[in-house]
Amino acid sequence: MNQPAVTVIGGGVIGLATAYQIALDGTKVTLVDSGEPRFGTSNQNAGWVAPSHVIPFAAPGMVSMGVEQLLKRTGAFGFSPTAGPLLASWTMKFMRSCTEEHVNNSVPALTELLNNSIAGFEKLIANEGLKRAPEALWYIFSSDKAAEHAHHEVELMTRYGIGVREIDINEARTKEPILKDTAKAVVEFDADFGIDPKSTVEILTRLCIQNGVTIRTDETVARVAATRNDVSIATNKDSWTSEYLVIAAGVWSRELAKSLGANLPIMPAKGHSITIPGLANQPMRPFLLAEQRIAGNALDWGLRLSTGYTLTSPKDRNVDMKAVSKLVDTASKVLDIPNSTVNVNPWTGLRPSSPDGLPYIGPLSNAPRVIMATGHGMLGTMMAMGTAVLVADQIAGRSTSRETLKFSPSRP
Ligand SMILES: Cc1cc2nc3c(=O)[nH]c(=O)nc-3n(C[C@H](O)[C@H](O)[C@H](O)COP(=O)(O)OP(=O)(O)OC[C@H]3O[C@@H](n4cnc5c(N)ncnc54)[C@H](O)[C@@H]3O)c2cc1C
Image (cartoon, rainbow, N blue to C red):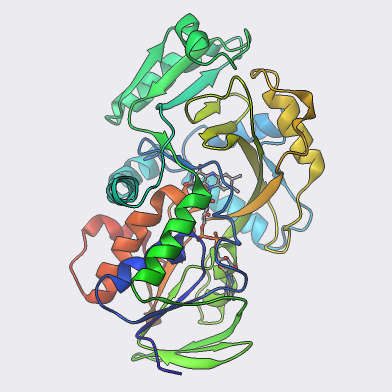
């Protein structure tokens, strides 16, 4: 075959956005995916694009919240028996990262990455037909301490310069009739919006093709090997060399990096979603049922609800109907949705989660021609465009900000 300058492994949102951005430099790119692109986690997630998410997942309070969710058995957090030996060390690293210092260190880097991403999304919306939900994101609180939680959220977010405001609950119910009386307080995040993640990957696939990216589907990369000057790639069908390799293979990136001598603690965190079409009281916006940890989004064709963060193995890809029915049950405590929604477009996905809540973006120290673009956890869709710009800059040798070193795969 004609050797591409860059090979990208993975046709999820990260691989597609990255292949497209690199191709914009006039570079010859091949993208390989073991299924159809759009097969992985990127397809049916909640579709939030939330620039407010500058606080990493590993933050003070997250351990106690995880324990509370486990005890309440909401299904929002859990461990699978198939999680394997990485689970213990990942959990220890996660707990060690839940500090104020880690948050303060991470916020500037995540802000920069998210701002670049939002700029990319704005172009997709303005020029490529990506639709956004009409209204801004809400956090909806329903516990006895709802008002207290809402004040706390506003205080915390304001501290980091994020535009938030409390909405009067009666006004909220008028705007979103799907809310039951159990909803007691609402906070609006000015700049956060919702998109359809499937449309995003479809548009990125089209842009890749239009810009000359070769997409190889139904082909699995079995082996990679690197020298200081190039990388060789062997699939179940073919083999070739490239000047650079980008590993954007979601939860499956860990094994590929391992074969190159890098030990990246990427844990699959399983979640589920359903999408309910044709609701008369369809909301206008993305939202979080805060105490229930259920994310919602108003897609063109229905209401998406998603939840779950079960640490598991990369092989755990079946929809768990018990988890889906728990999702519907829990959501219906706050939302007026029909009971018969359990079987409506159920889906599951595996988030590639790092223990410190930061993605791995950058070259491997012992294989500098291999660039990792993974570990985005809960934020892969919204960080995709920013990740793509950073990887393209690294490959083209353009200067990048010092903040981005915090995403280095060789960080401590
Ligand atoms: C329930 C749920 C809700 C979420 N909500 C949001 C949200 O609202 N906003 C947000 O930003 N993020 C959200 N996320 C997270 C987001 O979905 C992920 O971070 C993102 O999809 C990861 O994208 P990716 O491209 O890294 O991985 P994937 O989409 O998993 O893509 C990886 C691809 O690599 C391919 N691959 C793997 N190994 C090989 C190999 N050896 N050879 C060839 N191909 C290979 C796979 O086939 C796959 O297509 C959510 C996730 C879940 C589960």
